[in-house]
Image (cartoon, rainbow, N blue to C red; front, side, top):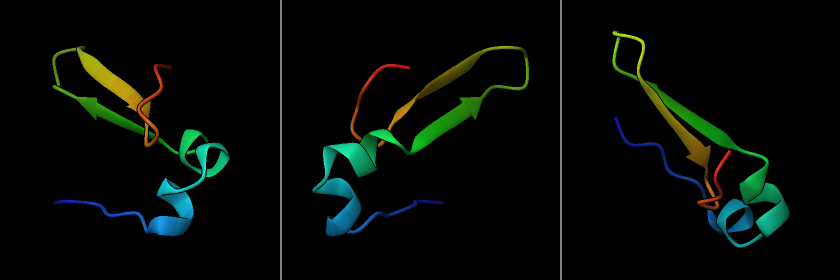
Length: 40
C-alpha cells in the first residue's frame, strides 16, 4: 500500500525530516528512515 506525501511535505526539509517510516519483518529485523531520506 503506497503512501504519498504532497509538495508541502516533500518540498520542505524540516517537514520531511519530521516524518519517519518503519518496516518490520516479523522476525526482529527492521528498517527505518525519514521521508527526506535521512538516517535515523
